[in-house]
Amino acid sequence: MKVKFLLSPIAYKVDEKLKEAKEYLGRYLNLEESEDPDAIILLTGGTEEETLKYLKDGLFIIPFGIANGLAASLEVQAYAKEKGIKTILITKPDENIMNVLRVMDELKNKKVGIIGKPSDWLIKSGNYDVLKELGLEPVEISLKEVEENLKEDPTLSDKIWELSKDKKISKEELLKATKVYTSLKKIIDKYNLYAITVRCFDLAINLKITGCLALSLLNAEGIIASCEGDTEALATMLFAYKLTNKTPFMANLARIENNEYTFAHCTIAINIPEYFNLNTHFETLSSVGIEGYINSEKITILRIGRNKKFTLFTGEVVKKPFEENMCRTQITAKIKDDSFLQNPIGNHFIILLGDEEEKIKSLEKIGWERI
Image 1 (cartoon, rainbow, N blue to C red):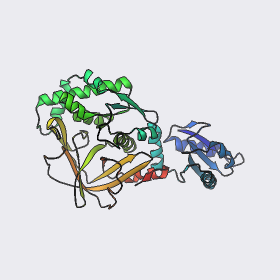
Image 2: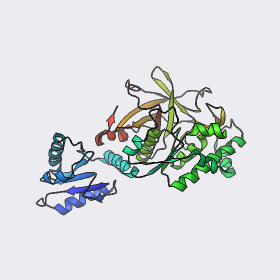
Image 3: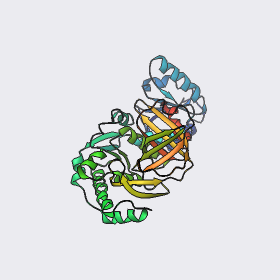
Image 4: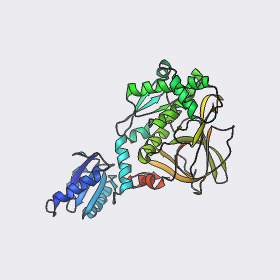
């Protein structure tokens, strides 16, 4: 992150204050001192006037230490507000806030592959706005490239076959599904992609192969991949993974019964569930879908969208029997918060095992709106 440290030359132990700030902030951020900073770090009072040349929309104002940097920061933000400049004051840069800033900084200038355009039904969730707001660079890639690089991987097929508990498909279908994985890996390497989203239903139509296995394996490897060209889901998955180090699961909300909500999809990463079966893809009843079984008492449900908005909830997992008339991995949870679904920002939710609310809600402290 580009930063500017500001402190009064008459303050006592100036060098010690600067060293302490750099050591603490440097644990989380790759600090680059700049005259065009993303953040100004106020270490002492008497620095207010010096900040004027750095004020701009989106600037972080971060006081550090106990030498009146906080008092100076309040004055600076009050001035910026009167001038119509939208700054973000972080009064207490604790570990959770710093980790959120770290992730935001890590995502900047990373390339994400849009393989095939977002699916036609994603009339809201396929925009590139949220990617650009996070500093991610979208790279459009034709689905033809996927078809040109298809190659079966028998070794991979054997491995997945052995890892799965129950097989509801033929091994031949599993082998065919590895073609998409090998192709996507080549594309990721070719374009140096940090993450991808795929217009996967076209693969099912054109190739009679679903992308579920490929996306499951990529996510398990830490290469974040979303379905259907959903760019907002991709951004959410990337943020969640980098913040919590937990593999995210992208899912539809499939059913509501009282305060029990069932989420389902066919692409869960194979490292998330306690065990998984190999099944067909639900909508087409063909190729491969991942039927995962979750062992967790709680889940975290997250979605971020454009204009720095996000939804965040936790739920208590309810054990339910597997249902054939639904996407293959199914997670039901009790969500006690009545505001769930009052302000939806997309049709796909991102799920993490466990309760990660405390970490993620720090988005509010850096200028995001929780809805």
